[in-house]
Length: 278
Ligand SMILES: O=C(O)CCC(=O)C(=O)O
Ligand SMILES: [Fe+2]
Image 1 (cartoon, rainbow, N blue to C red):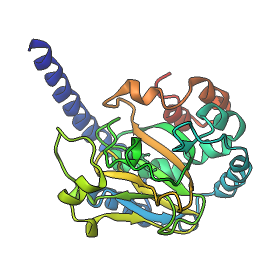
Image 2 (image 1 turned 180 degrees about the vertical axis):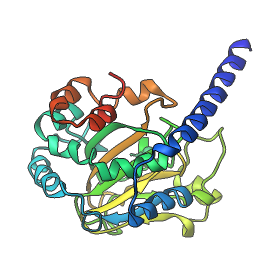
Image 3 (image 1 turned 30 degrees about the horizontal axis):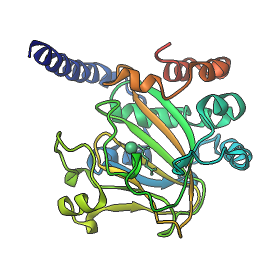
Image 4 (image 1 turned 120 degrees about the vertical axis):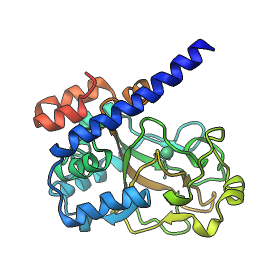
C-alpha cells in the first residue's frame, strides 16, 4: 500500500518536473520556419503529420537514400514469428552511419525540441521490413500507445510505395484517441467498437513519404494487408526527452557500442542527443 502511494507520488512529481523544465526551456527553443511550425502544430492538435522527403529537403537525404539502397539487399531474414526483419542498431551505426546521422539533422532536432519542449534524446534509428501476413495480433500490430515518455516523436520514412495492399502505419486522431488506463491494447474489432473505422487514419504514400507522430499520445499500429499484400520497408527514428518516463526502456533501444563508433562524427548537440545517457 505504502509503496503504491510512493510510486504514484513519484510519478506525479516526475510529470511536474517535466512541466517546470518545459517552462524553463521555452526561452531557449531554436528558430523554426513557418513550414516546420506547421509540423509542430499538427503534432499538438492531430498527433501526426504526413509529408515527404522532397518537401522536407533535408541536406543529407541523398546520403540517407544511398545508405538504405545498400542496406536493403543485405537485410537479415524475418524473425521466427515472421513479423519484422531489422538489421540491428549497432550494424546501422557502424556500417550505415548516414542513416543515423540523418535523424540528427538540426532541422529535425529543432522540430522535435519544439514539440517535446525539452532538449531531445534520440533513442533509436532503425530500418524495418514488416512482413505482410495474417498475423494482426502481435506487438505493434495491435492498437497501442508507446510509453517511453510523456511526449515523444517518431519519424517514419517509407522506403517503398505504400498503397492499400501494403503494410502501413495507421492512427486515431488525438481528439478521438481512447483514454482508458486499464486497456493498453486493442484489436481492430475492439477499436471499431470504440472509434468508428471511418475516423481511422491510414497513412499511404509513395516511397519517400514521411510521417511525424507522437506515439505516446495517439493510438496507432502497423496495419498488415494480409498474406496477399506487400511488405513495407521503412525507417523509424524515435525521440524522447533526456529524463524519460521509462529510462530503462529507452536505453535498450540503441546499443552503446554502436553510438560510440559514431562519436567523433557528431557535433556537440548531436552528441548530447545521441549519447544522452552515457
Ligand atoms: O509499423 C508501424 O507502422 C507501427 C510501429 C509502431 O507502433 C511504433 O514504431 O511505435
Ligand atoms: Fe508504437
